[in-house]
Length: 512
Image 1 (spheres, rainbow, N blue to C red):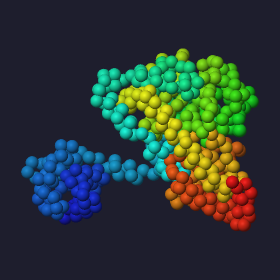
Image 2: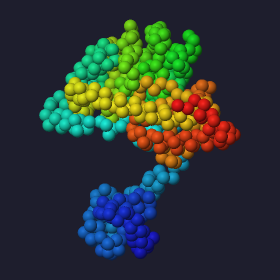
Image 3: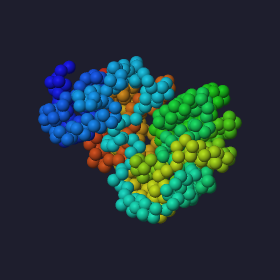
Image 4: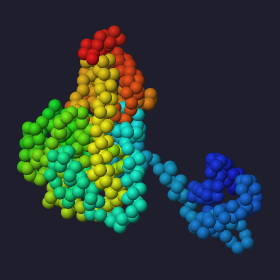
């Protein structure tokens, strides 16, 4: 390649950079990429700085500094007073170019992923859209008292307490003490602060349980339908997942010996996800007895029971257990805001020290400022006041969604739960393609989670939709619900061959 072609190549590549970013750093990156990709081959001379600077519209001193930096990094070499050359020590096949041309495997993932990494990517079902209608599990962060929260954060940063600047053993001590009192009052649980561990989100908490209690190939029972996120974390730790159907009493316990006895049982007994079913007392007793008999550990996911729309507190499974086989999982993502990423475990006394050690070894504790602020936030009654306020607002939004959907669709849909939480599940009475419906609504900017995707066993799968209502106001709910219902009616007509008048007649049978 002659000198003019090299100048043209560099000029074109630099010109493609956004105008506001054509800086010394950008020029350095352009030249480095051309060298790594082999477009400026090893041993080839770079254009003289005076001419290239003129062509690029930069000062010669800027270009000289770029050349000097590339010399220091080993991309260029100088031969005294002669031209500056691309280093001959660089390999002929550019690594960056090889990465771009590496073909993906049949699953669409780069072949260099491990089997575990591929499995995690393939089973991921979370949506990139986490706001708007009808994202489930999302609170209205506009209702949160951020002014109070900022004040508490600033207070603890200003004090610069020594214990906030170092690792802790399982979490900030005062926060664990406050949580022990809070759980005693709100969830009828008796535990010591020593039994509580503070973690960065529920997924890390589940990961810690799997690593500390399970070996590769152990079996875990999961609710079906159930929370895909927990399944993915457990599967990534080498557990064999056995889906167990959920009915109107909660987890439907199988006959002894089928399937294989579990090491872990993951349940959400106070508000099953996504159906909202509350596990009956008889099922709870059977589950606890089964766990004791099989020496299994029960992870109780209590993700949204604090946001309830009835006057009664449903006691935790942890508080009901006579033997210590239950691990309680709580989170602040629903009660406060998702970005906080603080969750906690309450573990049996005999596991407390080992879990605290495991947490320190695997993840290291941190975020003491937030934990200190959270301790004051709960102790001063701010969390209780916030929950009291949002419960009434969310309950009204839930009612608006029910009226908007059920008055129009009638017996084409049925629902369950709704006594707590931030979403409603709807089951279709006809086998509509809920995945296709979700894709169609997503194009319109409306998130409708397909209910069928929450099932692991196709034999029990049902079509439907999971609709979140907490994060959007009543007017948005009504507008989005009207659009959703129109699409469902049209899909019902197309997929089932039902005339439009008949669809409307069926939808009015049980209208509110």
